[in-house]
Amino acid sequence: MFNFEKLDVWQKAIEFADLVYNRTRGFPAEERFGLSNQMRRAAISISSNIAEGTSRMSEADFARFIEIATGSVFEVVSQSFIGRRQDFLTDENFRVIYSSADEIGRMLSGLRKSLVLD
Figure (tube, rainbow, N blue to C red):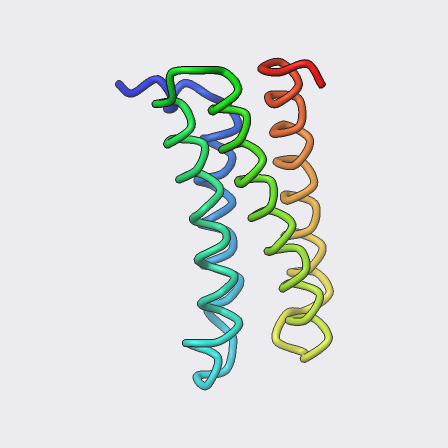
């Protein structure tokens, strides 16, 4: 078992990627290489950066990868607003993504604070 697999936030990030994949399946075909792809890539980036960060030799380096993962959470939220405005996401799907992103963002913030004092 890799050490990142033990992190609750990594597990939540994997679930979040599944959620984003599922909720973007209904996007129009012309968005396959547009918004749905962007949202999926950003969602995947969250768990990937957490995992990569655990391989770093210092807590400061790990914290930097947590910051990058947090940025990816914010990307998905911003992209979800666009998806909702374009009627690609229902209000309910938007709320589910937003709520899950908020939870992961809070978890990442807590992890980052535990690593480095500002």
